[in-house]
Every structure is written in structure tokens, then in C-alpha cells.
Length: 113
Length: 113
Image (tube, rainbow over all chains, first blue to last red):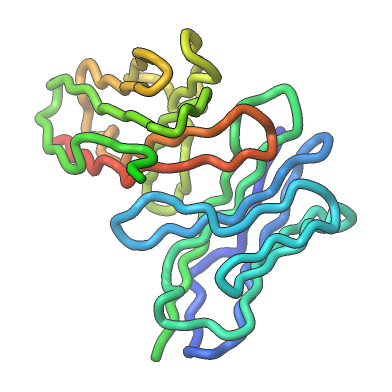
């Protein structure tokens, strides 16, 4: 079945460090891929998305590229801030035949001043 | 913009009590979802409703029932609460189409003693 695998956290970085959170997926067909962010006490918010191979999603300095050859959608940011501390979820939705979204288990990021 | 509204935000129940979690969205979305979030387990789908008038089971439906009251509202009922149902519950909605992201409420934090 479809699945999403994220790197285990927590990830602890100093402010202005480079961030990578790995995400790989298994799915039939051509799924859409999403990154969500969850701040403490809140629901998940869409951070960025990509809907086809080689698409790059970007938002608020975060980027992720849909790599079909490696079935990956890694999240990157060049310079993190303390305010980026949150839990990040990778997710997919298959292109047809389902209304379900598949989520990874989340990666907690802590950024130190 | 209200988006997805969940009530209540917090609730404490005793084992065996029943309650209904309410969810409403004002984005005219067709699909609605209920998830539970437990530490280290990411999001698990309880039930979903692809469109008004339909509901389907997700990964963990046992002990829950749902009602899609109309296009806006999708409620989750615990008939006889158990301590294992202590969790944070999230409602989400999405437009029709595989490239559409989900929109989440802020969650209901439920403790069962």
C-alpha cells in the first residue's frame, strides 16, 4: 500500500543553519506530495506542495522538489529561524481511486538561538 | 476566515461516557475527515466523507461513529469512551481533486479518565 517515511526527529539546529528533512514515499501512479507544519497547540497548516515530477514547491523560504526517480520529497531551508521550531509532516495523495491522504509520522524541529 | 472550526477545544470524560465532537467548514469543500494524533504515531484516519451523504471507515474506526450532517458539518461520536481514546482529534476538509491539500482545524484535546 501507499506509505510515507520521514526521518526520525527531533532535529536540533542553531539559528541560521541549513535544514534538510528527508521524506520518501511509496505509491502507485503519480501522487501529489505535500509538506505540512504544525506549531504547538495548533492544527496542521499546508507549507508547500508539488503535483508532478520535477515540480518544486516553495513557501516562506522552504523548498521541496518532487523526485520521481528517487521517490523523494525532501524539505530544505537555507537559514532556519527560532520561529521555524515546529513539527513537519510529509504527505501524499494518490492521483486517482482514493480520497485518502497518507501522512508520515512527523519530524520535530527545534531551532536554538 | 474561519476555515475549519472544531468544538470543543478541550474535554475531559469518564470511562463509559459518550460525547460528540463537532466540525464545520465554510470553504464549500466536498470531502471531510477525522483523524486522531497520538505521540510518535503521526495522524491516523478514523473516518472520512468523500461527499455529502457518504461516509467510509479509515484505519482506526472502532469505537467511533460519524455523521455527515450536511455539506458543512461532519461530527464524530464516541458512544462509550475508553482511556485508549485519549488523544488529540483533528477534523480536515478538502476540495475535490487529487492535487488539493487538506485544511485542518485546531483540534480537540480529549482526555478519558
